[in-house]
Length: 494
Image 1 (cartoon, one colour):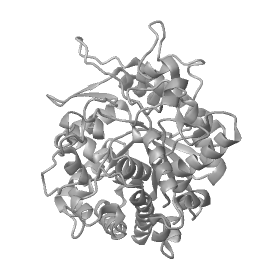
Image 2 (cartoon, one colour; image 1 turned 30 degrees about the vertical axis):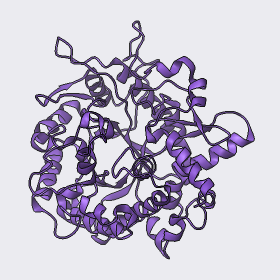
Image 3 (cartoon, one colour; image 1 turned 90 degrees about the horizontal axis):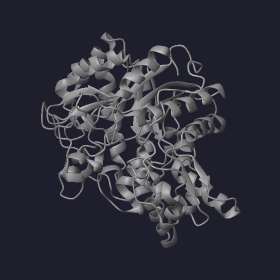
Image 4 (tube, helix red, strand yellow; image 1 turned 120 degrees about the vertical axis):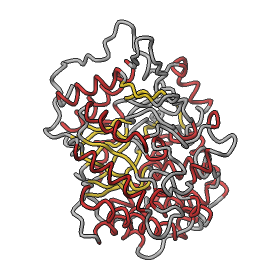
């Protein structure tokens, strides 16, 4: 990797929406007063966030999979129980200065002990689908070897409980909690980790059997690359662009190996990756901005989409990284054939657009949520869904994350009025409905998140849930948005 490319990569990481970094000075100047507004959570006093123009007219396809999503480390707790090993997030969060307030996922929302209560909440909401992840170190404490039966039993109880309540399980195999023992051996920089992931995936496939209709392989590999290896905000907390894109390749390889492992079991379940995709727009009408946007999109989206859906990495990204980059040198014969093993669906996670300047920087065009990297732009949902279908064909799509944090407060009357979240979801649902009308084969939509939880480096300061969690007592209180979402599901539309 050349010095120039190294600087560009670090610059992109610093400004990337997924890095959670602050705005560039250029971005702040363009944003103006809007930079101080958390638009997703602020609703004008005279506005009714539950109202939709033409209310009652936006009906979704029959059997549309309305759902919600969580991940293991963010909600389970029970960090040292029943044979669970250490993950890189245990190590990272327990390292002073790494997370806000020194928060950890040791207890989180205590879902490991309260799973039955949480399933009842899902049933009462009317959820048709629940997307959750399996904790790798709960299945293999050190990332290898015979699976821990107590860990498998927990997830089997969870899956069985979902079926008993008429909710379809959607299981993610990897949502960032790499066993620490594997990190000690090189983590995702080590090619062997992809093969250990395939072994782990096989153990979970066989342990949960045909009770899981949909599997997702790797959650947001881009976030691991950017936050974990470029900017260092997430575990393992590195800032090494030479390593970052080798990690990207090994995560993609792990995905492909897991797809092949499922096929080898003879299962009829469906499987695909989960990508956070960000529509990239030129910040102005100049050719330079258009060219910079194309390359930025290569790093944000095409690096992951192209390798899985076309069997090749984008030529412009490879050229930008250089032939001596660890990614290019790390591609072995047959890797892209494995990575592009046919998938049954694509999971899309949408949070924010990106506006790219002629010099490859970014600017803010919309007000943000409490997560300063998240610009509120529902139209981006329509754009990214239609773009995937236009560029890659009619691969079935599920939205597996979309939501925002709000400064939710438990009121004196015991309720949580998160009107802004309702307005946010309403507008994004409407954008998804437009995408379906435009021909996008969208099958389901999972709100992030079911519960307030451990929000990675932000600890417990950000609340993203439909359900409020009083962490002192672990009491669950459905917010106003939960009751609104219950009606959306019941009506199958807005």
